[in-house]
Length: 205
Image (cartoon, rainbow, N blue to C red; front, side):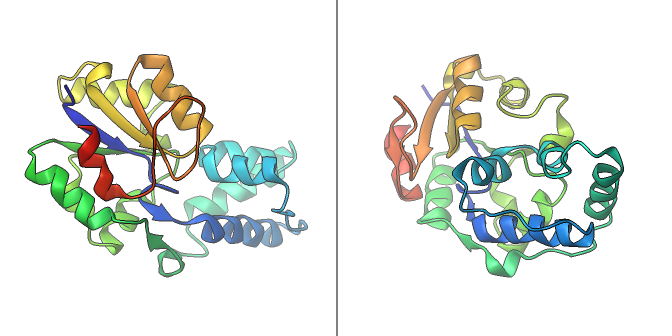
């Protein structure tokens, strides 16, 4: 029995890939460093799935001074939000409305940082979610299951009673580590069922 639905953000709630990659290259330029060639799949995956502090450490190349500068830029929001270059993923508003009508709580678990509430407000979907957990709210971000366990505890659900919808290996591993049900959004991830439209989530409950 499903008691709670948990969504990843980037790549699940919003298509933000190009916005994220552009942001990191902007930050590198601000630090006097060359841009990343995002055609390298491994770097794209890191940028799109790692916690913000972790990918900044990768991009800084281990230079502590550059890393501190990047953290300062990120914390001061020097570039500002670029939500206008993002789009909601397929069938999201209708899918959220269907789940809400069934009376199930919904939460977001993301390795994105403090911008999550602003993003959800921008797209006018924040009120659908009963709990938001970002990389700043846990000691260990995904692939650690800490965030999933935190959400489950809040709603009195066992991990096996939660359905987590994600799009990356970090999401998959987090679910597997605690026994939560997992559905992959728009891309195959090992043995996970795949959905490509949020209106199909109701069929998995």
